[in-house]
Image (cartoon, rainbow, N blue to C red):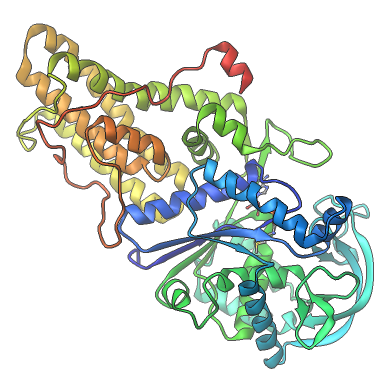
Length: 521
Ligand code: ME8
């Protein structure tokens, strides 16, 4: 199963504001999983992009006095720059205003229509522009959407999608695809929602213009979610394109990473649209939790949409990536806290990883071993070394499984067992004492074991800390990682470091921040 081509997507973000730390969370996760797949030699593709149609965008553009298309064009660089600043290397960036997307969305429409699943009616009910969601009277809470956002009364001619027809089909599909939604608890919520019976879904709007015109009925624009969900296939070039054959069905693992706010669209509507259009659903929808910032909900009124770039500038993109992936359990709600970010920075990264590298590569090896990786028989291991190798093997195996299962926080926990074990090994073997005593043979064994642990770590950490992992490799005298399809670089054999190579001590990976610097973060 694991050798399948891997297609991972983030939600396509609305361009009504700049990207914030919540968007960064999904995008970094997708990048980590893509890099991991690549290190394993798998064929991987990472898609992100922007959702640019709909009433919400039309209104923001109008507020700014811009035609919506121009407004959208102006917003795109903020997204691209943000992902670049966070070392997120997507393969494709889809915009829903691009012709390639619009053509496929139209085709999806025509297919659903040909299947007899689209009919003309009139929608009367509530709509939240902020959520781009229709709500029934029953769903409202104190006259507002369940998300707390305002709703408006809408009464207009509308095309409908026969979602009700798909209730049983979806339930049967869930039954036969027990991994379709993760985490499991949220899958259960999806199933109970569907079990209650689905109502037909309003699929077009007539009271504004900013959307994809409905084929054959240009006074209607497509409901923005029908338009948006099609991006996952429009970006592959549609279902007749080679990329579709490679990354969608039946031989690929296509995973949508989404926040829990939009799970229903992905786990209910999207597979129903695809079934109607005669296309297979994705392999999995992975719904992560919701993030608060320093204990508070991010909201327009609070003005606390935390932009990721200043944080990345202050602590480094990799440290931010690490913090997001380590501190917030994937799937659960969590809090972004500056204090915890600094604690992870100084603790796990500085004292744990950085110090391990520093103690050996910048200190003992240059001082006592002429700056070279010792030439030793790496297979002749003492008890302590055997234990360290076992820890490394366990960490690599566990971290690999956990990343396959999309549990990045637990994968990091597993990797840090090796960081801790290697630091403990240094404390116990006291290489500086060995140097003092002139016990060069033992000193070489010890240094080699630590350097080799660092090599293993540089591979396992590369998906999370691409820049720092390569900096570690440079210091170890190794080339930067260059993942190659078909070549599994995940560490599995002890003794890869070649004796005699020079180490190249460099700047500390995670220098300490003093009080003033900490306050500024
Ligand atoms: O919903 N915590 O776009 P959007 C965690 N265009 N994740 C968060 C978050 C938070 N506080 N805030 C945002 C849309 N996210 C649609 C998607 S897909 C076909 C269309 C992340 O800009 C999370 O992934 O509102 C969430 O699902 C997404 O951003 C919502 O982004």
